Picture (cartoon, rainbow, N blue to C red):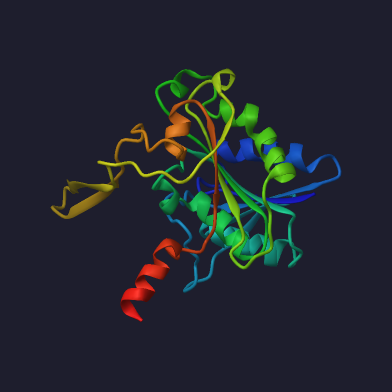
Amino acid sequence: MRILITNDDGINAPGLQVMEGIAREIAGADGEVWVVAPAFEQSGVAHKISYTHPMLVAKMGERRFAAEGSPADCVIAGYYEFLDGVKPDLVLSGVNRGNNSAENTLYSGTVGAAMEAALQGINAIALSQYLGPRTQDMSDQFEPAIVHGAAVVRKLLDQGLWESEDYRLFYNVNFPPVPADEVRGIKVTSQGFRRHTSFGVEPHTAPSGRRFLWIKGGPQHLPTLPGTDAAANLDGWISVTPARCDLTAHDTLATLRGRLE
């Protein structure tokens, strides 16, 4: 099996090392693992592509490259440049430091890479590690992903739904913020929504008097509705959320046609 991996935390991120271990276990002794990751952190860039300017790429080692671009750029570069247009069997994105559950999914560069892979007709899985008070005491905050990651990927490859439709499925996986031996299993979930919290700004004034704004996230440990990703994660479950790039609100089409056409 030939696997292409990327992330949004950057080429030197510890979560990428975790993902490399997962990918090597899945690919097997006769497989290939290719790494194409951003040269610098690209968190929060979602499905951005560098459409208006070129990106510098550098070889960091055997089958290992850094690109001054987004995670989605890295998928495109990996596929068309470094793999010479030979489609990989699988794209794995992550393991992200922090959750990409609920509304975080929409901002995530980790998920953006999986989206781009799906649009390119490649099977893809995004993996993220939820952090919290209990993960701070672990010797490695990625422990749940390290222990359970390969098994989750293998189970999805063997038993998940894979298809060749225009907007094909990809998967968003989040590991819970608990020790690995307390992970309760896998829950298939929908994407949740954290109510009463959102991104905002934190203003600062520089010594020069100029005004700057930091984008600031809200609380991450608010449970979402039952059956959704963040609720499952906070209850100790690995969430697996099937997703598509099609943003159409299909449930409204019939009503809107009746009103507008």
